[in-house]
Image (tube, rainbow, N blue to C red; front, side, top):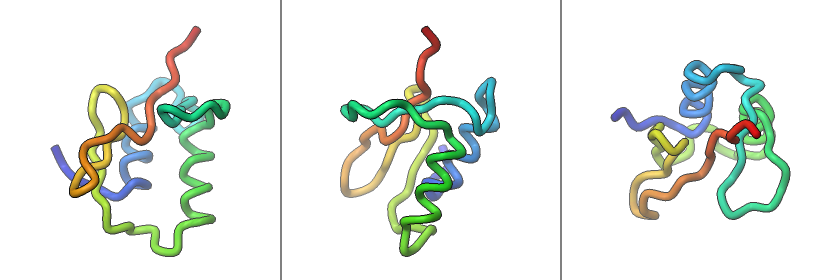
Length: 82
């Protein structure tokens, strides 16, 4: 698995999902409504002081996982269709 920045991971996730950047995703343990991959990328670009964050991310079957010292937690999951 290749480690990448969070934006790179979201872009790659968009490439492998059915709806691309319009694919709904959610943050585990967060009660907020799902957002699209495109909205997540825009939010990171608007709020990150350094888009190439020091943390590395990988795409797994469960979604996007953060790797490194902070463990191996899922940060975004594709929202399952109802």
